[in-house]
Image 1 (tube, rainbow, N blue to C red):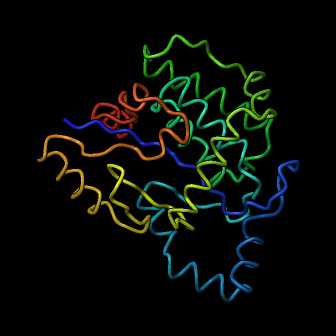
Image 2: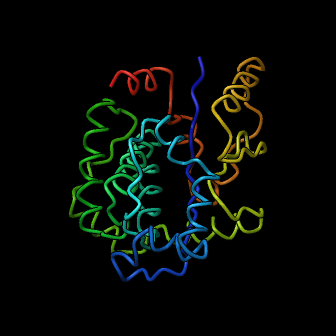
Length: 238
């Protein structure tokens, strides 16, 4: 039986976006500008095949007019929740925010809305998982909003961004397994299954998360993991 931890490393697609604004533009407008017009954007969509890959992963559609914004606050929140409650709870929140942004189209820097959704997600996850790994009190919507409006965790995010730049990571998604094997986000499920089977046959993990110290995640939090066979079966059943 294999359990593993996913440690999310922050990455900014548009680091110049103004943090003081709830959103900057629609993602449609952002991509049309990025790819030099509608023709270039259509070509890029066809090359990546994101629609088909999203459908295969259970995402019915991507909201092309979702509101693009600075994502510092949401990155800080994900890291804080992981350290406070465990990586299983922060992963559940991350999944919820993927729906919030990519499907529902809400801005990640709309702090009052983000606080409301995060409070509900954390509460539901703790109740569902009967999480006994933390004695931390449940964060209220008000407390989350205060956190989002503050600066706690900013330094860790900035340090992680510098480390990514030094490693030559300039695009996402990327996965680093055992602190050494880098997998491009375009890789299919078979690639991950093969690597996990190799670890399973070996019977031990070699290396560790290279960003845990940069992000301030302790070994105990990492060792508790974020996914187990049981949790994945529960996700499939729901």
